[in-house]
Amino acid sequence: MATIERVATRKNLLPYDGLRGWIDKVAELGDLRIVEGADCATDIGMATELLQHHADAPSVIFDAIPGFPKGHRVIVNQFGTTARIALTFGLPTDLKKGELSLRMLQKIEQSKIIPAEFVEEGPVLENTQIGDAVNVDLFPSPRWHELDGGAYIGTGSFDVTRDADTGDVNLGTYRVMSMDRKTVGFYISPGKHGRIHRDKYWERNEPLPALIVVGGDPLLLLAACTELPYGVSEYDWVGGVRGAAYPVIKGRVTGLPMPADAEIVFEGYVAKDVKRVEGPFGEWAGYYASGAREEPVLDIKAVYYRNNPIVNGFPPQVPPDEQQRFRAIQRSALLQQELAKASVPGVTQCWCHEAGGARMFVAVSIKQLYPGHARQVGHVAAMCHVGAYAGRYIIVVDDDIDVTNLEELMWAVSTRSDPATSIDIIPRAWSTPLDPRISPEDKKAGKMMNSRAVIDATRPWEWREQFPAVNRPSPQWRKKSEEKWGWVVNRVGKKA
Image: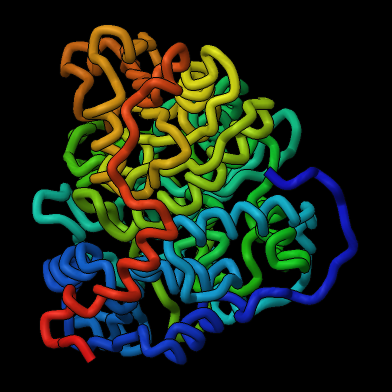
């Protein structure tokens, strides 16, 4: 990630401030639609699934939701196009996904950590509920998938927690199920930073203080979805990308920092011995893999929200969907960064494929430099922080392959790898109860591990110079061909 270096507060370099500023910019792009009258029980979830499976669909704000005041809104499909992802990072909106990933990496590398700045006031304090006045049923909470065990107010939310030993603040996205007016349940997979924080408090026999930001800045949400190093606060990382400190306010109950411009924030405690049934929920791998079981809950002591608040809806679907389109771009950039930090040379491009949930199917192209280079790249990619959680297949190819192109990638696997000699297996790797391939018996026993296949689909080092030439035209030949004969591929065109 960006170097941990404190720099002076500067002006926000992004073209927007907070969620509402982002919405204004999306409207300027012609990428926003307002829908009124859709209900939380079925309509919003059904429409969202359709939107997320169309790569050019707009972002949609649902308003006038039955049972809720007009102005209490839900926004979905925020990051369904590369243009809106680019906008979120302040990059040109006409970039293709591979180029956007590399530009994003460049921006991250050039950023320096800027610590969050505490302020006394902000729009999130326009309305406050404390104690007996708490009623989270005031906000629309959709049922996102047909077989979900209930409504989930938190899909595009993020939890704010603190390390009990170091005081480091973390933001992480974990699904949040609506329970009652003062309680929400949330699931955190083993090994995630929020879970580590929770376990530390519980080891002290103390409840975990926590905030859940249900609506807020798009870049904070995307940062909370990202594998940042342990101890690096997403607030500070986003400050570096913005070029200015993110303004935060101390929660009145826990003292945890909440975004001053957040739409809705829940504040409370998570006790070790208080659990309720959570799930099932349609998950990022495309299954209801973790089922329904007892999970901890947030006992909400305070709620803060803006006038006419907006809930972020970011539910996972069967890949590829909105989540994976974004995660593929950002996670690919971070994987390339981690390979560089591991001093692995010759890496030209990384891609965490959308079809694999941007985790389970990863490809890296390299310029081969020495014997064993491809295997080194594959094993590091499999076990670095970005690749370690719930990975499955890691494919290494030569630099003539566009790893963002699934057909081109599988052509390389089919023609340059040999099943008996090109595949390494890594057993007992870090996975999750959300992994659909872990058996019910292993899940019950707590064995949340899987294996990894590292597939070397490069030309074999020993005889790479004798490998058959590719019958693809040279760039010069292709240019000449397109100039002379490009017109024949146009159905309605004809030679001038």
